[in-house]
Length: 453
Image (cartoon, rainbow, N blue to C red):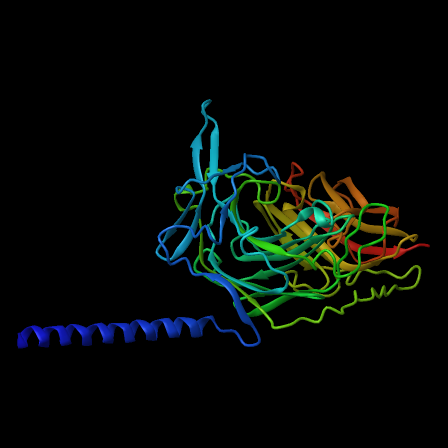
């Protein structure tokens, strides 16, 4: 009897010790979830055995539902499952009845289960690498019809990464009619978003969005609008003054990343999410006003272009003055030398902007007229495209995409256009060299963008 009592006391002590340990672990975990100035609204650490359908919905869709994407979103646990404390969205390549490539993948949302207005959203995730893979963390309004169908309703993109460029992440907003779009870019050095988990966050307040990656602030947006065509704009901060919900998905193909190819490894096509955490402040200042747009214009005849004669060597990868960009399998180099820029392509890529030279931040005033001119030639005859675009206004064109054929002799090219859209402080001059049927070297100098009236 005494032995039995001693054994029972021993077991009780062991259970008490175990509960203390577990309690300590739980307390530490709760501490990890604390965030100064915020209260935790809801979270999912994905510690269960299956998707928590009290928080998440499966959202099945047929292929081609949006953005010309190839995947069918399914409710299958082959495409959406929990493993080792992570939510896994897996893209799978199979074949249809006719032997054509067929893709399935996963998408989940919190619509009508965990909707909220304003807060900080933090998601720890690891993306897959591979041409045509397109993971995203984003938000849409609970009732899209409140301000009208997309883009009038608004869209918050916390993270998008293209599988062929996994060192770069994008955070952006869509809104308005006409379609407005603002985007920030964050580039890792010496590693990629496919090599490990990173935290993607946005702080959403009544008059401002602040985007972060691993706690590093990389983009602020505080100017947006929405309206029905021909009507007055809705009061700011519409459309981002309503309830939104979180979405996680792994798309395959589409207009932005392009389609998969023979290099895409579908054995490892998995978007892994470690946690989703949503916080709110106790209160928010709802008395906000849209910032006034200050359009600083040079005098008529003044060249807007900075370093237009390429007399100054500059970093072509930063956000200042000229920027050289590659996308969708474009391979090329750019060098400023002898008062010109020399672009040498090794692969023309899949789209015209696969090889691209741009300069943004040029004020475009409604009712004014402008002239673009430059000198250029190529190592052999070839086409390029020139335009003036609107990065913050759905990439509409103020100067339409204009194809020209360069010869092997330097020539001057001149184009004029009228600004008929609303004022825009961020017109962007573009030279697009991708997918033109040639990789001949291109030489450009004496670039001008001037207001003529």
